[in-house]
Image (tube, rainbow, N blue to C red; front, side, top):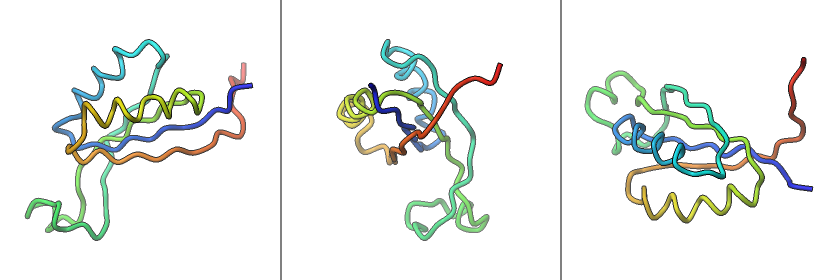
Length: 101
């Protein structure tokens, strides 16, 4: 049985379109969700002056629900293509999923 996970990717708006295209090109990815989010935290050095004043940084969150092995296979390719872009990721186990028809 394939262990399922939720792969979360957080990127800047400047690379969001490139990440979208990259994800759409991978056949192993059947779909994903993207959301505009605001990041808050202590990394003021990475924020523009306007972001520091506003107290938030505009970012885009991608969520992919897929087998853990496939998610782990994607990470090196993401690093190759988006290394240095500030892409942040985390994996979460999916305990249960389905459609309520």
